[in-house]
Image (cartoon, rainbow, N blue to C red):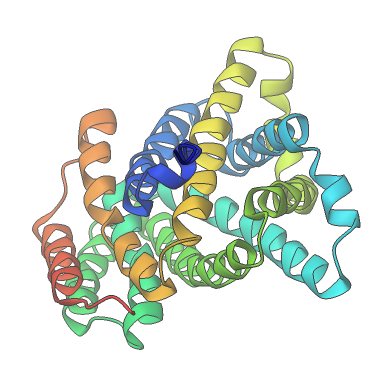
Length: 285
């Protein structure tokens, strides 16, 4: 009588789409809590608290510096690049959501993953977003510069999100992705320090604000990024990129439920265009 096969760990038993679903929920749930902190801490400060608290969790959990020191030079370069991308991406993302609704930033953010998956951005989605931008920039003269800078940050985040997908897949496919991610997050903490530490100072003397910042970091950077690595490990890059394109729907829903932000018709149209692209997508074999 043959021995029973050992039970597979939960990471392998759950389909990669389940890990993506968890990531999709927390990808904007954490930032929606961060928006509530902007009244007390500037966006760059909240971004640094998010990155630093996630780095601290990874440091305690994985001790990633030992793993990083043993990596070949080329792999170290990729991890460093991912850390720098995470630092800048999170900072400009928070600057964007401080100026624009979550659904708008999410709709702009997905153009990058579509370009990765399909080789070109969706023209219909760009047209819908362009109409949204024109209305936003001509609404009130006093707010024009503030909102215009929000779109600049949002499109910068879009480009950085593409780099995150490309580098994230290289990290996941190389093995020990969570350890590499932990090392990248420590690098991101250092990279974001000069920009974010001054703005984060109010939280360092207020236990409630500090706890809130740590909560934002865990829900925004630990849970979704770990789940991304678990999903990327078993999903083709183009499939993962198009699944990420569903995030604007998550952003619109969470923005409405948590922040009372009602999406515009242009934003809803852009979301529907993305969902249509996902429905027509044929995953790589």
